[in-house]
Image 1 (tube, rainbow, N blue to C red):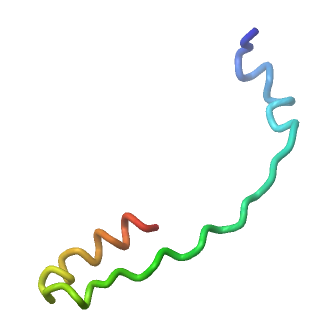
Image 2: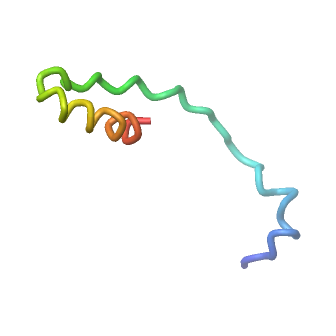
Image 3: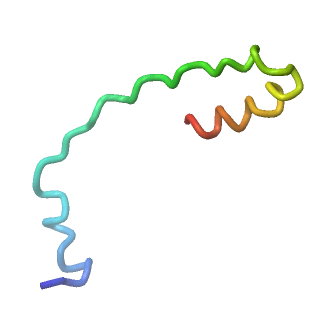
Length: 51
């Protein structure tokens, strides 16, 4: 049965809570192989998508 949140806060965090290790760093893109202008354009997008 579902309860209002204010009635179940004291039991919400009961149970196992395990921190996972940080994921490995994403590989560096092969941007230098691309045309310099295209590499310059795509670099910020790649960093944003791999964060």
